[in-house]
Amino acid sequence: MIDTPESTPHKAAVPRSRRRYSAQFKSEVIQACLAPGATTRDVAQRYGLRRDLVGRWLLGHRRHPQPDEPKFVAWAPAPERRPASSPARSGASEHFRITCSRGDRDICVEWPMSAADQCARFLREWLQ
Image (cartoon, rainbow, N blue to C red; front, side, top):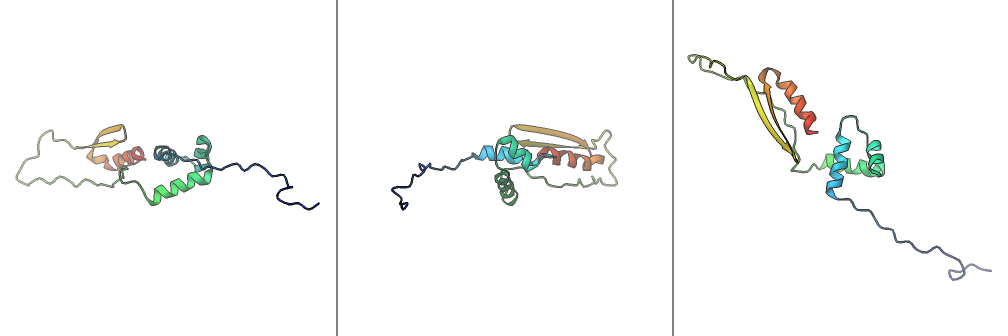
């Protein structure tokens, strides 16, 4: 007997549909990947995703960051210049204050000028 399409049993065609993920979900997954010590494998397992998909999202994020995301800007305070004739203010603050918002989180940091590099490291970690 010759097999013809009519005589050969076939599987019922199952329509395949792509899963779609919201931008908010993708952002959450990307932020999890950016956490210190996180790997795409661990994040993919936690969210029930394929590792290559998470990797593609992360690569796209790094190539095209969203404009509303906060970016770290390195900043070194300039020393305060006072005219030679004016006396230094007594009790003058040798601190600086930075206020940042990220999503629903706000932070206000007051830090001594002498430790600006430590403040920069702190803010860099907070913004990741």
